[in-house]
Length: 63
Image 1 (cartoon, rainbow, N blue to C red):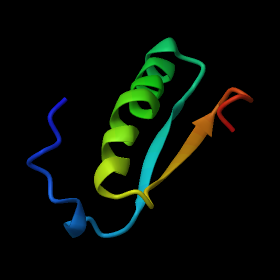
Image 2 (image 1 turned 30 degrees about the vertical axis):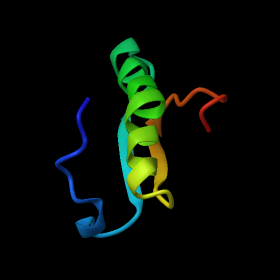
Image 3 (image 1 turned 90 degrees about the horizontal axis):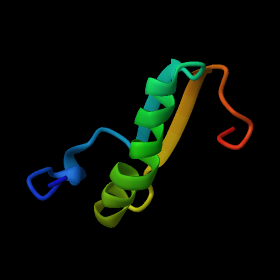
């Protein structure tokens, strides 16, 4: 993933949200990618970014 073209200083705040039904493997897979790949890249440019995960059936290890 190439995040080099994004200007993180223009983001309105430091919160990234993820909302979904966590009973489906597709959303858990997407959340795993967000946590493992995307958020670390965002933190390089904007280290105060917070990930907020909301939805139903969120596993205890994510809460």
